[in-house]
Image 1 (tube, rainbow, N blue to C red):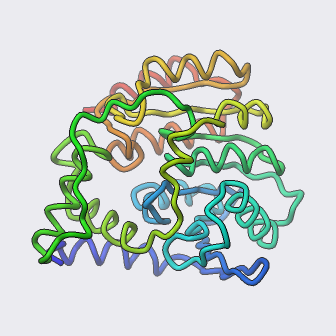
Image 2 (image 1 turned 30 degrees about the vertical axis):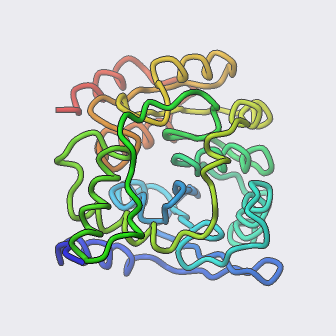
Length: 293
């Protein structure tokens, strides 16, 4: 695969800093990675994803938190439970997380894309201090994807596979050609190759608003302005208006994979949200806008 050696090394160096925990529930094992020290923060990846969806965020967040990042059931090196249901996924995540931190320990929780929908449902089942959802699925509103993805499984050569991954990243995940770099391509390739859980119908269905209402706690919604999985300018304020403790930000210069494409801005927003009151201040908005470059 013609991804650069530097991208592979960057992933390997980060992975080497993790403490791995293989946690079993009902005969199935979920693989968790732990970074840093501090108050517990759980990060959930998206569909066709893995813990590497947070490759540009973990180090920043681990400076102040104990960051727990799983490969969700049916992804990466985690076992696939019987049945591709949201309830099953949430149950296995919750049960294995409780073994690591305790069922009554309050955590902060962030989820990306399909992982945002999972995070909202998980937050309704256990103590969660603060919740952040990045480009979450489950809003059941129209997508804006203009160009179809290609079937990467039909690639006959490494070069064709690399081209397919870059194409799919550019039409679905990232808004700038500069962001479709070797690191993004390597993460996307490895994650797609090891995905067995079927999340597409769940992500495109509903349930997000209901789960957020069931949780009822402080929530930050983050979308990239060019996210093709939703119209952020419409859906973000609509969702926030339904929940009194919910705030939202639309990050300039970013597509769906917002925490990768605008990592500095998102890291700041998450750090601020996790350590501030229920609302972000105008100063935080200014910093975010200045950080887009």
